[in-house]
Image (cartoon, rainbow, N blue to C red; front, side):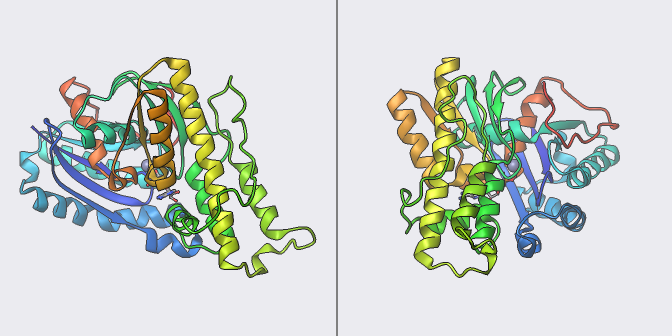
Length: 340
Ligand code: KG4
Ligand code: ZN
């Protein structure tokens, strides 16, 4: 069996052909980073328009790489939640149109669940039940993932997402967009102990939540310093930028790793899966590995190419399709996180 999955929830236009044995026959990701770079963040209207231009060539190229035709697909799947409304709509309309024209079933994909499912596709192992940490530009959430259909929320950010904090701090430091890879790159030559930034909520063992806006503000004040409010005008020495980046990254990693291990202790689960763009971060990966070994739990993090947005992770739709979970063609987009 074959499924064509589409992903347009944010600023990547992606498609993949995945089989019922979770083999990836073809996959394409068209990144829009260049379009959003000068705004140092995703501009929703630009993202939606770019998806319109790219979706059909991306589908064509995916099928060409897979060596399959549209008619050979058993179903069409699409991420319809959560994400940017205009972006999600482009993928959904493309998927519905294909379903209508080819008389194929439509399968819905939850983008956050799919980020965790990337760990299953990459490892080829059954990863459920597990603690799932999803850290991306829009989300920082912890789930008790019972199976691929049932994700119970354990906690999440109460303000900025981790990736959003990376992007905004990168902008303050004069680093390019997307900020995550840029910060992680310069942090390699920085001292993570140079500045002691806050780790909000980390000491609170009753909560599995994150908060990164205070950390972001602390970096801002550190750059500006007393009596220097116009921090943008400052020329920072490269070593200062590296030290600020490394210290900021360390604070984020402490919070993410700390709360993930708290979730392990609270749930008693012995597997941890991590997905989303920030899961590509080398320091976070190394730190989670260390902590997982110490706690004796299995850790699965998808390879970096399956951490940032892609359609391969939409292979989660194969399980829904096989379970008969087919959508009507009046399916809508749900930009916010849908609570189960
Ligand atoms: O999952 P994703 O591709 O899109 C969303 O669903 O948001 O995540 C994008 C986010 C951006 O904020 C980007 O800065 C961050 O992931 N990111 C990273 C790294 N690579 C991407 N953050 C930290 N370190 C990285 N290496
Ligand atoms: Zn994502």
